[in-house]
Length: 155
Ligand code: IDP
Ligand code: MG
Image (tube, rainbow, N blue to C red):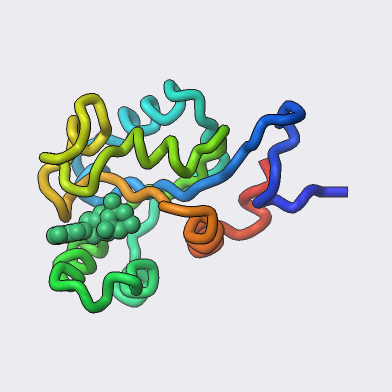
């Protein structure tokens, strides 16, 4: 029987809490050829990339993905930025990966992000900040399902 794909990986040792999260490399990082370096950092931190693609969001898709921010002053700028070129969304698996990837990417505003984080090292400003990562189990499930079908998640 196939396990539920959003549950635990087949490789999981007993007693280790594995999770999956959605990381999206945003158009600024894709256009600056930073996909390889961002993937390298994710793998060097011990996480596994389960599925990945390159895709350009439509306005409708971007508005849906970021609908929690629809009343914010930066919403229109965010949507225009997110549709300006292709993104590279991926599903990343690992121990406590939701919280740990948020640490690896750093604070939303790169000028406030810790040394050595992806946003601190690579991002231009608070909108063009290179990466998105889910912030909870609930958003991870929703955001993985937004980009990837069940059959893409069987690895
Ligand atoms: P997060 O990406 O660190 O989770 P959120 O608050 O969820 O940050 O905001 C989503 C995205 O909206 C950010 O990654 C950034 O691209 C953009 N954003 C957030 N806050 C601002 C802001 O104050 N000015 C401009 N853009 C912002
Ligand atoms: Mg967020």
